[in-house]
Image 1 (cartoon, rainbow, N blue to C red):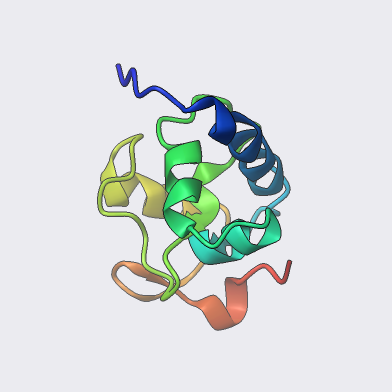
Image 2: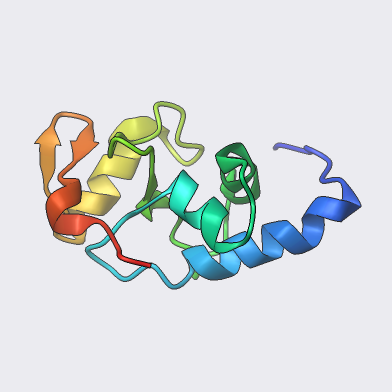
Length: 109
């Protein structure tokens, strides 16, 4: 179990990030950078920290990918294969083994 402590100044930011992620529609993905920009941050890493080890099924963290469409090597709920599996089950297609076809599936925030 990850017991990473969240600095209090980031708690509201992390809540905002999870709120945005919870609205990504099935069959679409968003990038860490898109989410960061939407919540007024310049640090895409904070998006990763906010969704790491997410256990709330209403926050579809598997729909967040890198700016080039790549899935996360260390997806916290089973590695990149699990993230890819979840996306495939929602109809998301891939242009390479680990890259989502962003032209078809990028969510336009």
